[in-house]
Picture 1 (cartoon, rainbow, N blue to C red):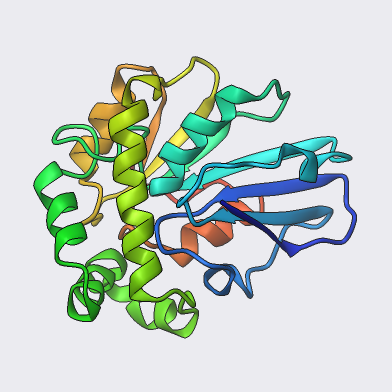
Picture 2 (cartoon, rainbow, N blue to C red):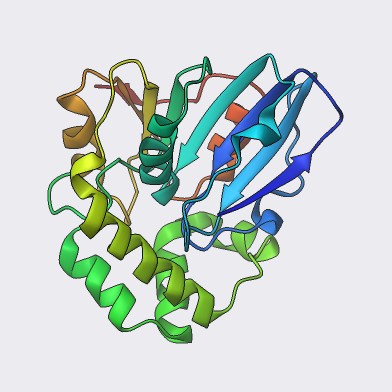
Amino acid sequence: MKQVFIKKDNNTSVFLLFGGWGTSPELFAGYEIKHGYDFMLCYDYRDLDFDVSLLDGYDNVVPLAWSMGVWAYSYIIGKFDTDWKPCTAIGGTPFPIDDTKGIPEAVFRGTLDGMSVPVLHKFRRRMCGRELEHFMSHLPQRNIVDLKEELAAIESFVRIYGDGMKVCPGLWEKAVAGDADLIFPVANQVNAWKETGVPVVIADAAHYSSGIFQQLLLGKEVNKSNVV
């Protein structure tokens, strides 16, 4: 895993974002960050090595997790004794390959097996909806080879450690699900969180939503159409 500071001004508070599959720092450049906060991005889950010492000196760590980053955070955080705030999940669940609580297995397998430039372009269109232009203007600098390696690694980790992906009480503050999410179906997100008592905010958004990220990075509540 790579850990990169998008903003580091030696503040005492930091947003810690676990990004989705295929993320890189370019995707999160240009956001306005709440005054008094730094911003670290974690991405590239070809390995799950996390250096918690990079957050030494912060009195206030506010974790966020998007898409596959929800699974990565749920797996990694259990290894550390932290006093961080509960995490907000965006467009993902701790069960990334699951017909009722994540990405349906056939869809995940089809994306992995067919990974190519056309398949990637189709995935991005489905992921972004009306925000495709914004995404392309902040395009992650990742190539097909390492994207496929990352997706294969995620599948392997899930198969091996799937039983360890528990939704621990108190780990999550809330989940935000886009009503137009074509990657993690919104019904599956609701199913995944319902059994844990984690509230789900339904937002007017696709899987990728720059508006949701901006609201959270300013410390604001996400605009919502419903809460379940």
